[in-house]
Image 1 (cartoon, rainbow, N blue to C red):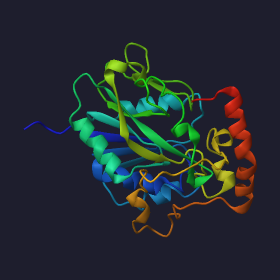
Image 2: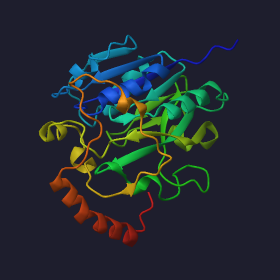
Image 3: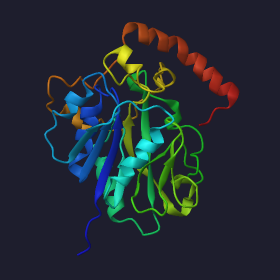
Image 4: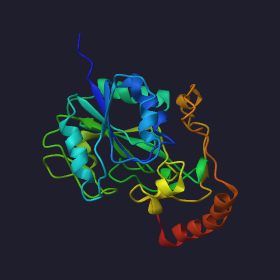
Amino acid sequence: MKKKPSIWANCVVKNEERWIWYALKSVLDHIDKVLVWDTGSSDKTEKIIKTINNNKISFKQIGSVDKNNFANIRQQMINKTFSDWILNLDGDEIWPKKSIIKLKNAIIKAPKNINTFCVRPINFVGDIRFIHPEVFLGQTPYGPKGLKGFFSNRVFRCNTPGLYVAGDYGKEGFYDNSNKTLIENKNQTKFLQDVYYWHMSYLPRSLSEKKDKQVMMRKRKRKHELGVSKPNWIEIPEVFYLPRPSIVPDPFYKMNNFEYLKAVIQTPLKKFKRKVTGWKR
């Protein structure tokens, strides 16, 4: 019988107390190990991670990292990963059970020529009632013709020839020995159109506004907008309903009155800007 491929997750965190428990719990039953490296959290991120009693988690505190050195940290994680496949897991992304199972099955059945799988991040904006329009708009970069919206390569073979990470934080990419990003090599990439994860990149990651701003690019990433309402086919992650320690925040975050008013004002302005600029990505 063919041995099932091993999967490790790589997770770099900083001030992720709002979502990290859900992120880890959503994948732990479906992977073999997760490396969690904390880059100097000042909130309850580390304490929350340590409430999860699971020997699959390998936690390490590495101290503050600047945006120019972030790719090097990801490279070090790859070098410490001894599995067939790597799941690139952020501390603010949560997987519905059906999607992570579909991804795992795709990995098990992957042809030898496929080195990476791309899936759809459901990017929430304002709060978890609204989805950023980028999820559904525009031709998918490097994707098959007719596929719309943004996709991300979240999982890739650990033994991809020449695998390395390059670029500043927010622009880092995973490359192979052709010096192209994995997603650019279309003959080695497969898009899974019915696989997705919840991504809270545009929402607060820490309960404290001050500590949230300590995370790189938070000023640019924190957005207020009444985006697209969540369609019925996007399922709420089951992990949101699991019993959780009292230290773990409620996942059903909503904007306060001031934030909602800000979103109401900004939404038509952003729609107009997209129309004028022809924004599609």
